[in-house]
Amino acid sequence: MSVRNILMIFFAIFLVVNGGCGIYSFSGASTEGLKSVSIQYFQNRASLVQPGLSQTLTDALSDKCKAQTSLNIINGLGDANFEGEISDYSTRPLTVSADATAAMNRFTITVKVKFTNSADPEKSFEESFSRYEDYPSTSDLTDVEAELSRKITEMIVEDIFNRAFVNW
Image 1 (cartoon, rainbow, N blue to C red):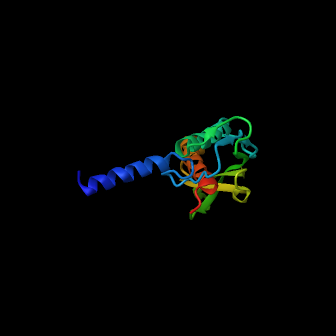
Image 2 (cartoon, rainbow, N blue to C red; image 1 turned 90 degrees about the horizontal axis):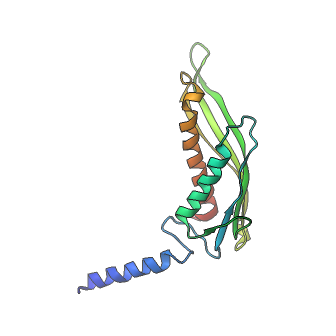
Image 3 (tube, rainbow, N blue to C red; image 1 turned 45 degrees about the vertical axis):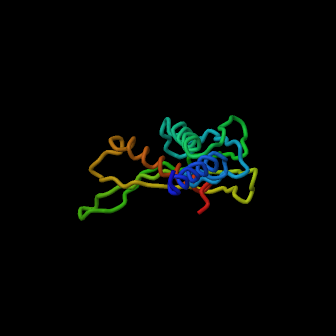
């Protein structure tokens, strides 16, 4: 067996041992001192309520934590806990064309999040996360809403997860 093969085996063992320890994952998520995470249902308190968005957001954050950490997802309160609400769900004209009509519209979702890290309270936070997608005014919101909501929710969940667990 060559030295190169031996080094590759040791490296593989190192990755397996350290990858499953719950301190650091390949995603860059740092969960040191944490064994569990809980995700409370995100209520939709926006002036315009989209049915199902609360469940979609809550499930997406839970799925992200399952896929990117080794933390146990529990009901109640975990060592790490997410809670919050959808505070804005809106569309607004963005640019105006020569005939004074909107050429582009901006669709925005904002989520207020309270994250509690019982192992390291300094990593706890309360913050709003907002993302948007622009769409042509020639499109009706109902025609593009599902796809835009999916994209925005995905970006917001990524932002929330990174703020909580990825400390670059």
